[in-house]
Each structure stands twice: as C-alpha cells, then as structure tokens.
Length: 255
Ligand SMILES: Nc1ncnc2c1ncn2[C@@H]1O[C@H](COP(=O)(O)OP(=O)(O)OP(=O)(O)O)[C@@H](O)[C@H]1O
Ligand SMILES: [Mg+2]
Image (tube, rainbow, N blue to C red; front, side):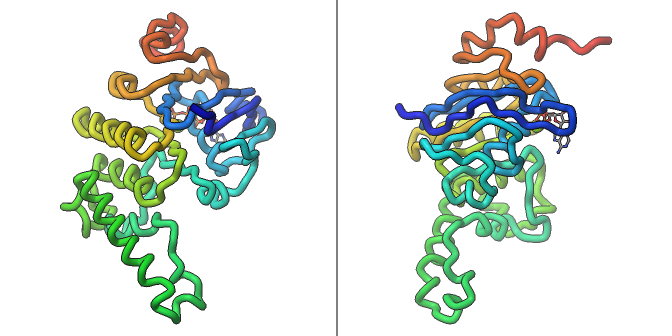
C-alpha cells in the first residue's frame, strides 16, 4: 500500500509556543489513523497545517508525493484533502440539505457566463441532488432534511459535519473530534460509517478523538501527541499498553 501523506519535521509556532514541534509521520492510503493527546497538545493545529488553514513555520507536507506545504485551503480541498471541525461549522439559517449542497464541489452554474446557459449546469445540478439524497439516506438523516441547522441537536450537527465529506468526496479526510460529546450509540454509528467509507470507497482518515473507548476499535494505527511532539505510536493493542500514555493522558486529574 502506498503512502498518501508524509509529514516531515513540521513546526507551527504561536509566539513562543511550539504548538507542533518537529512532527514527522507517514500515513498509508486507505488507512484509519488516530491522533490522541491531552488538551492543548497540538492535535487540531497539526490537522490545520495539513488542511492549509495554518501555514507551518518549518517542515514539509507531501500529499501523494506532491509538496503541499503552505498551500491555500481551497487548493488543498481541490487536491482531495478535507477537514471537518471540532465545533461543527454550519450555516445556521440554512437547512441541513442546503448546508450539504454547499459542499458539492462541481458547480458550473456559479460562473456568470455559464449561468445564462441552462444546459451547461443542469446535469451537474441533478447529480448534486442525487448525491444529497444518497448522503442523507446513507447516514439516516432524511427526517432532518429541511430543518434549519440551528434547530439540530449536537448529535445531528456531528452527523451533518461528517456528511459534508460524503458530498465533497475528498480522498484524505481529516476529522477533528467527530464523536465528541455525543451518545455512544451514535458515536459507534459514525465510526461504522467511517469504516464503510474506507472499505467501500477507499478513503483515508486521520482522526483526532478523545473518546478512546470507542475509537480504538476502528483504527489501524495511533499517534500520541504531547506538547506538540509525538510521544509514542503503534497499533492500538501496543499503544494502549504503553505506560507513558497513562502518565500523560489517562492519569487522574490532581485533586
Ligand atoms: N490560533 C491560535 N493562536 C494562539 N495559540 C493557539 C492557537 N491555536 C492553538 N493555540 C495553542 O496551541 C496549543 C495547541 O492547541 P490545539 O488546539 O492544537 O490543541 P488540541 O490538541 O487540539 O487540544 P484539544 O484536545 O483541547 O482540542 C494550545 O496551547 C493552544 O492554546
Ligand atoms: Mg483540538
């Protein structure tokens, strides 16, 4: 299996703080990688650097062998990398369906000149609608189709955040806490959808998640990030046995 993403000696600083500090790793295609670590350890910052939301201060990022370091977010999305957000990012006054249509990538009718010629955009509009129906059916959210995003529950918002990936069809999906603060039944369901997308569509996932009890069952490999650095890595059975993991991550909070 080939390497889809390679990160080498990546550094991202905020003032004097090295939020990502010399991080290197490789992700095989069609794999599910889990990134864990205490609050503030640099997980979101690392994903943001890959997605082009932050420009790294040093280091390199390669996607399918191409150097994408410091590229703009829209260029990175067009190459096939998409990130979902820790706090779902939605258009609160649009319906769930409208929120999803925004993420369909081929919109020829948006070009002024094309908009005058129906046959230049009508087929793509039909395909977008079909994709929308397929997505809401796959994720069993048809009943919420017309509800405004600001009326959705926390769990429904997490599903909406995940369904954007099915609309946009990236190759590499970066998920920031896809099941944070939702019930275990729905959390397992979302991880089953992720597994299905890997198995049936060949997608690759890098997932940040604190819910280890749920996530570890579904992932191939784990990196533990502490103070912006990789503390340890390995397959779930190995990493969960590492003493240092419990010291930094699972140790009880001081009284
Ligand atoms: N835009 C920013 N400006 C300044 N400091 C930032 C910024 N974003 C993150 N940081 C700091 O960088 C460090 C890493 O933050 P980050 O959000 O990447 O952590 P995290 O591992 O995702 O944490 P959590 O598990 O709480 O989501 C923290 O100390 C945070 O305060
Ligand atoms: Mg975070």
